[in-house]
Length: 230
Ligand SMILES: [Fe+2]
Image 1 (tube, helix red, strand yellow):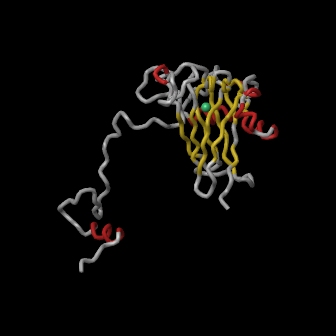
Image 2 (tube, rainbow, N blue to C red):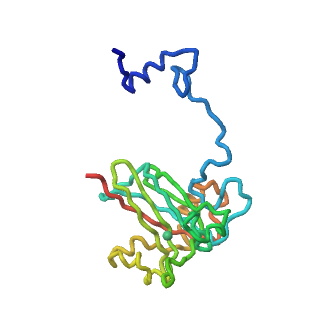
Image 3 (spheres, protein in one colour):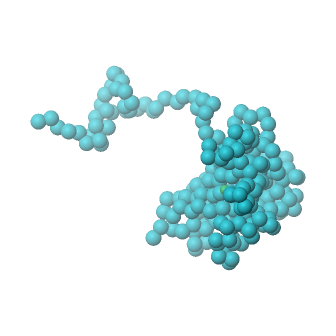
């Protein structure tokens, strides 16, 4: 009877093959050869104002949003993945389901990703998103969608709102939150030259900006608490 190999045995066996290449198999002592990433590698770093290969900057007011991810005991969560997505300056998403998709700002990155450092910190450079019509008589206030995940924790999907926006109080999704919880997703953005200078320098350094933060930009802090899996 022919012996059936388990996946592990089959893989171990492939290490013994020398010389002749079996398709897609690995060989002892050699690493998978590198290839160019090509022009279509997804651009998903934490600077949404710079699209790979684009010479122009996106339209809109530039903002920095930073903060830290903590567990419920207040301990920083290192190596958590923080993802954001939002509209451009005209309230358009980079999604085929958005009817205005063809008019979107091609110089805007729309999606960003950052992994927290040992202090749980993350930061993004982006633009202030615009309000958009969720239905005929409902306009969503400017907001940034967040997803945070880390092994050992429950995934968190939430939204950041801009303090002082009059649309917040009319928004069905914002209002679904108990009043006491609204403050924790509402962020006050301040002109970059009014924030602590060490903080401004640290954020600028994170984006390799030797000259610091641009005067006309705004900075907001959004800290996030995630729930450990029981
Ligand atoms: Fe949205």
